[in-house]
Image (cartoon, chains in turn brown, green):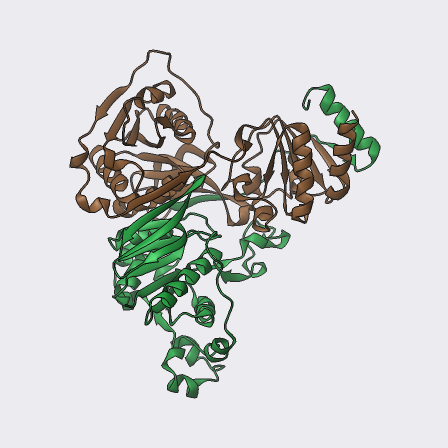
Length: 338
Length: 290
């Protein structure tokens, strides 16, 4: 009872990166609370999966292995997790904010009447003073997320309902192996028929096409990112030219993507990718919290902005005050002349 | 055969255009600086509803929104674009609701509507980006769900085949009716307002609006029942007050902080040739770039 559970997504035989990141974060939280860390894996052909989780410090792995559980559909996965959570009484349940996690998590909260915070950028343990009830609840999960256009960060708590649930985007938490080779966690294989009924299989997947990501933004050592201040799709082409030259990747803010300057898979920030490159060019980016939360751990930050007071300049190592149309071609030309 | 279609829509502050005026000096939100709009994904959902209606003659599209009195604006907007009926779900008891309490109120309203084959809503609202209400409503009504729909490929009286957007790909699924679909921003944009419908439905009003002294269309409203927007309170839809609003919300906001970036000592440069050359020189010298 009272342990932490992480839903681990599998793609074929491999565990999703975001799930390993969440196990790492879950381990840290479990140590703070003095409880165990458990993982639930739901799918088919999972023999090779559990050992992949051991290095990240999981204490117990629940395997639900049934050919009907892959590919993912909502109802059977929700049924499995709801029963597991009811049986085991977890206090915290974490999921990746993937298309699967975002489909599944709210369904589970509706069944369990528990609170859920989407796209958290940080998790912590702390207390909460309930002024109405006149008491302090200890050992709660603080779920931090930028809110309202990204001008503020809200800390959300679920004082009374369990489990406390949160989704986190890929790349936000850091993956950490904490157990030596040879460490083995307890692995429990469950009888899936005890968890699902025939009605759970009402929705069927007819076709599924998944391509590997078209860019390597998450791991690129150099990121050239553009914001709404780039002004046009054509101006964004300059960023691609610079990225090609420097062997980097192009990223974008949500505003730039909404304006049609770049595709959604290049979004950096709370609801996009979190990056930690060696060098980050922020071109025409004002620096809303939602964006900054996805790039603030970059090594060197270079801001190119016509506004000398753009908020992002505060965290930049270099601030180039000038128009992107002037500065970026110069960067390209002078680099070629080096 | 015809379908009974319900669209869930939300009026949201336009956070996409939140400029410097969006925040007050004390860190609170300056709502008056943010225009209230029809949540963008919900417009995509409305379009899917209208496409289904075209495909299945005799279908009816009912739009439900939960919010304060002014949220009736988006019901009129939906009527201009082709919806048949608008319901405003409004009560002080719903105030301060998180997604779970919102979903509960909406599911009670849907139960009161009674008959439905397809429920559509946007994948997420821009003021929270949680994408939680659709799946929660589906569960509360005991319906299957398909989230992130880009296109409805086939529809019959018993099932729908739809294409959904997933991470790095798409998936085609078949699901039985009744069903809840959440619609992705990549789906077809909503058709524009129809001029004739605007002339007719700008007079559409909730009972509260009709009773207001400025309402000039009482005579027309008596002749044209379609001008009556419904307004339902908690009492109308029934339900447990303890599951509504702030009281029914398991999540609480512990703190809201204005974000202050940890300022670095930054080197200030201009766009001059010399400055750009020296920047590149430094980055090359310490092997930041190759």
